[in-house]
Length: 116
Image (tube, rainbow, N blue to C red; front, top):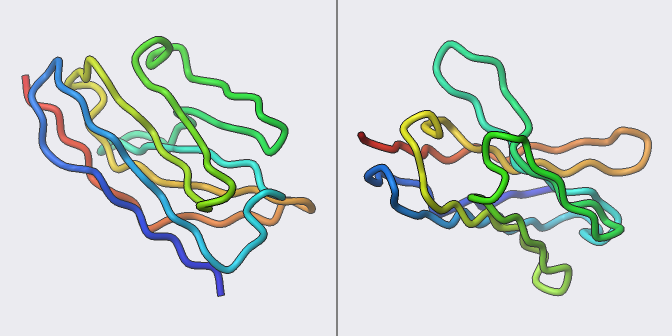
């Protein structure tokens, strides 16, 4: 059974920082591409950052230079360091794992709220 434990969300003022963490069990972590998505009220879920099993990271333009994704295969965790937060970063953030054959898993989501 695949289980996600997400943590680190909360309320922060604009310009502040938060670090999201996602610990995953029940799958072979190193065989999966990892990512963080977010969904704001009334908007579609969007890809924020990804970290492939091969070691490549990518970011949506709106967070480039402010957010950093990292993965630790030995600890089976993926994190998202978010700096210089803006009110438009307010959303529910989801951890995501994608394996071969398009087998995908989602975390339960963690709320990030940035006040102006």
